[in-house]
Image (tube, rainbow, N blue to C red):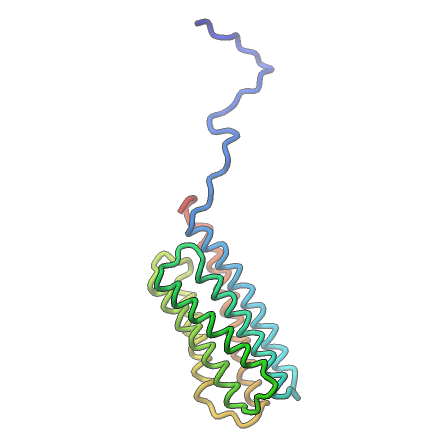
Length: 209
């Protein structure tokens, strides 16, 4: 066979040109969605923390609504994460239970008939405690998790916040909102730092991993 003469006007294709970019693997997709979810939760925590602290005359119902929103949103994020990629069956079950409990406790906080400050603090504390334990166990059991150390630290901070709210004797709504608002700010800052740490680690994940 004779080879066609070279035509300088004919575009030459390099090997691999026009090929679709390699798809992101399950670990990469997990890291991408994880840092965005943690960042949104951090921003929500900061906003709610500021609202709680700048509302000096907040009633029990108002405090319940603010903290209920936080527990409800965080619970929904946990439920979504429980069915994400790269999640073991055991962690999926634990995450689902923790998320469902957080949603349930958030709905309890909306109850207008609630007259007990201690009861509201208990709901909030249990929600934070379960979320912290779940995140700590999930990060500790998965060496491949991006920004694993920061996620363990975030889980420990959340669990400590829950313990403080459960065991502290709150006598007024003002004290509860002060302590809860400060913890929301602390958790929010740690969540935002963790989100950017996850994002940084996600860039180092090989394509297809």
